[in-house]
Length: 135
Image 1 (cartoon, rainbow, N blue to C red):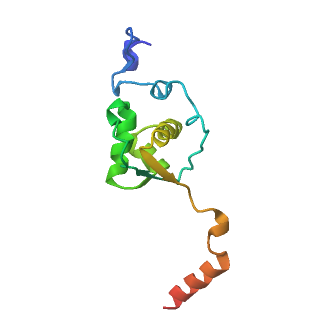
Image 2: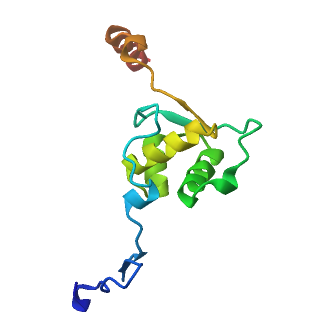
Image 3: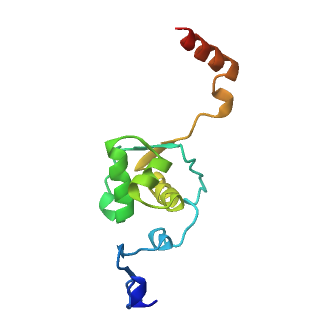
């Protein structure tokens, strides 16, 4: 890369972008992994993540900075996987892998979305809307 593109050339062990600062590639945050944990769990974008402060999950100092950032975001309020990715400014794939690590270690609990079969019938929802409009 040339200096007139606004980016500094590759200098040894650091990648640097003049506007963004040091960059860490997603595969570096996940150790090259693309799937969350050995159980191959799949996190839906709207699955809710809650910090589990049960005894035995206090080894946060052993976690990486991205893991701790996700835990910090979840402590303030329950968040979906999509919200965590947006708030942490990380790709969703990276967040899913990191959440897999946190789930396996017992730091978080994840509740999946309600299956469509358990949602109210469309006819009932239309009747409720019509009733509200009648008010």
